[in-house]
Amino acid sequence: MQWWTDLGFLMVALLRLRRAAGVLLETTYTSDETRSALAAFDAATPSLRLMRNVGEHADIYAIDSPNRHVKTIDRRQLEVGEWDGTTFRWLREQLNIDIALAAAEELYGVLRKTLSQVTMARS
Image (tube, rainbow, N blue to C red; front, top):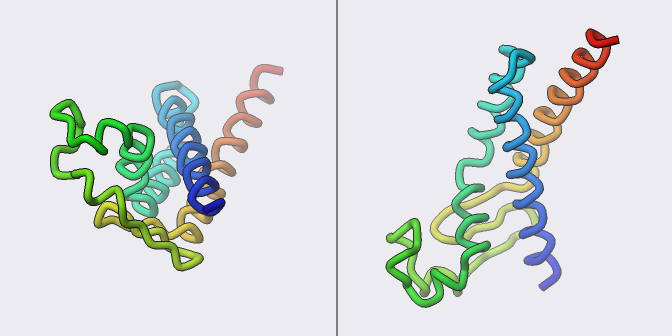
């Protein structure tokens, strides 16, 4: 079951990276390269947010609470997940870890490059 735990941490980390890029888009330091890398990341991880959010709030989904955000997800869907070593399938969605990692590395590289440019401009 370690893969399940590792996957949960990976999804949180990927969303934090995505959030950092989103913050950058709201600044004067954003660029077409940032927008492009973020769009590629989002395209590579279309079910990331749903999987992370349902996993993080599994208690609400486990009882089919009327307060859950995605009403089409019910408790029965929480029970079945599949991992083939590359792709995680859950909630009728899938997340390919290799594709997500490549997109995350690209996005992280753009963020580091931008930070470096900002740091140099301030010196």
